[in-house]
Amino acid sequence: MGKIVTRTLAGAGALVLAVTLTGTASNAGSHSKVTTPTLTGWASLPAGTFVPGSEPSGALATGDLHGFTAPFADQPVQGFSGIVDNHDGTFDVLSDNGYGNQANSADFLLRIQKLAPAFATNTVDVVGGLNLTDPNRHVPWKLVRDDRVLTGADFDVESIVKAKDGTFWIGDEFGPYLLHFDRAGRLLTAPIALDGVVAPETAARTGVPATTTSSKGFEGLAYSPSGRYVYGLLEGTVNGDTPGQLRLNEFDTRKQAYTGKRYAYRLESASNAIGDAIAVDDNRFLVIERDGGQGATAKFKRLYLADKRDRDHDGLLDKTLLVDLMNIANPRKLGGFGTTFTFPFQTIEDVVILDDTHLAVLNDNNFPFSSGRTEGQADNNEWITIELPRRLHADRDLLR
Image (tube, rainbow, N blue to C red):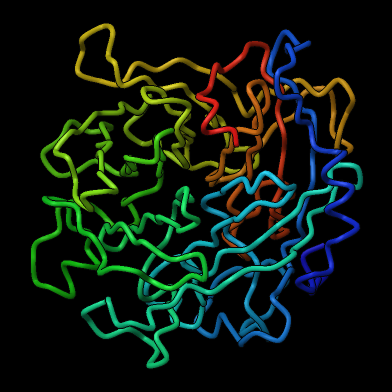
């Protein structure tokens, strides 16, 4: 399977999109009919899916490529690390920085992919996308490319929300920075740093000492129902904080500044990481928490509800287990799997609310390196929908 290369044409998804609109598990306003989190849809985008007619990529990708040969003739459609529901059967999905680190990702173009899952056929269609750029020279330091197209050596983009005006807020890990793009993918302001938090990539450029480890910036980004605030959840602990405790920072989109309000999310194990964080309402968030295992070594992949009201007054977000992604009921044996479905991927970095009882979750396949589903084969990008036994009571503004 790893050697099959799919080139998906933007605009080729009209038929698939029509299927998606009828095939997606979306039952807004209905009562859930399950007693445990249950798989209602499974679709897969092959690992070898590339943007046709783009640019070569992966010249510095080394290691076990699981049957693929680098460099690749085009840009891969891979590494999903954030998702936005367009409410028309399509989703804007963020590809992250490329091939794992700053040094080997200068030829990976940062991109928002426009995708349409078709659960009736277990497939995902690529119907468009846009590259992220800085034509107005808001980034004050030198970029890799003189044409100001952003690459995986410039930023490590890991989280995304879409504002009510159609612009995108994106969380980066090299700063960590908040990045604000217009709906065409053009950067609108200079990267916005988080006071007191410096990643090694920024430390190397500025000489300011790092206060966190590499690739531990804004892994989660949540948008408040009013659109006033963006909440950025760091993936790693800041130096001096309790190990396994992560900062959730409130940013005012009107004032274009952090408010100074900060909350703390406690990992179940200091060796775990978060994969995404999105808003449910003004106080609650959905958070993916995971271990670093894949395949047989994957043990802990969970979705939590986290509440910033801190009702037990311990100084931490209150956590409630919502879904164990390693133990999802699958009575219809969707995807050809058994009656218990597992999501055994190293990195699971996308969750989106479809309606009050249904979620979608996607993995980041770290193309072509991760091999969690079938040992020795590059992981596809899998897309699942889950029905919950109880309503989320999510804010309606976040569901439209």
